[in-house]
Image (cartoon, rainbow, N blue to C red; front, side, top):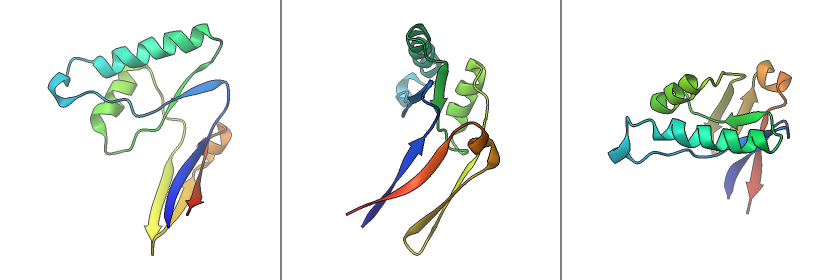
Length: 106
């Protein structure tokens, strides 16, 4: 049995998934360049912006996001206990239409 997460958010935004810069190119701000290009494209399509999930210990990605003008809008806590995941999204997530839920896969 595997559990995975499902993310729900305001449809006026686009979800930016798994931005990655190879370690050989670290420090060249390519993550920010890619995000800026994606943001420009989707703004021109009528979206309001990007939503990203960045783990709290991923300091380089967080710094890149903050340099781009991203802001925190909520916190998600996931705890694994006896092979079950418990997910808590704080009120900020709820206020911004962001929800994370576990889905069971067989």
